[in-house]
Length: 218
Image (tube, rainbow, N blue to C red):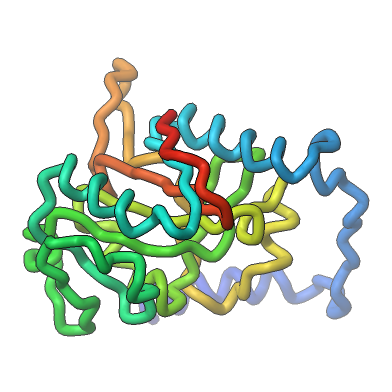
C-alpha cells in the first residue's frame, strides 16, 4: 500500500460517520463596509492599489492607446505579450514588438519579454485586488506571472465592485482565477521586502472610463 492510499484511507475512516446532507452556511455577513457612491468606490480602489505599491493611472477611452504607448516607452519595453482577445485599438499606437500568447511559449521565452498588457475580470475596491480569469483579453495565467512588467486595464465603473463577496458573484469558480494585490513581493524573517519573486516586479493599473480625464498617477 502506497503512502497516498494510506492517507486517503484515513480520510475515509474519519468521514465515515459524517452526515451525508450538506450543512447550510449562513450568508448574513456584511456584503460591503460602509456606503459609497460609484466615484468613491473607484477612488478607494485607486487608493488601495497604490497602498500595495501598484502604479495607478486614469484616462478616458480615447486616451488609452496613447497612455499605454507612453507607459511601455517609459519602462523601456521593446516587446510586449498580447492576449488573443485584447481589443485591437488598445495598442494601435505602440511600437513594441508584439508577442502572441501561445501554448507553446516556454517560461524562458516569456522571461525575455519586457511587458504584458491585459484586461481584467473584476477589481475589488476594499482590498485593492485585481482578478484575472483567463478570458481572451487576459490570456493564460503564466503570461502575467513571468514577464517583469504587467499593465492591467480596468474599465470603470463596470468592472469595479466594493467587496470580495460582490466579486465572487461575478466570477466563475471553474475558471483559472488569479488574484493580484500589488506587484509580487515577499519578506524574509528580517522583514526585508523583495519584489518580483513569483510574478511581475512592476504592476501598473489603468482605470479607464468613458470621458477624457487626463492621466493621473498615484
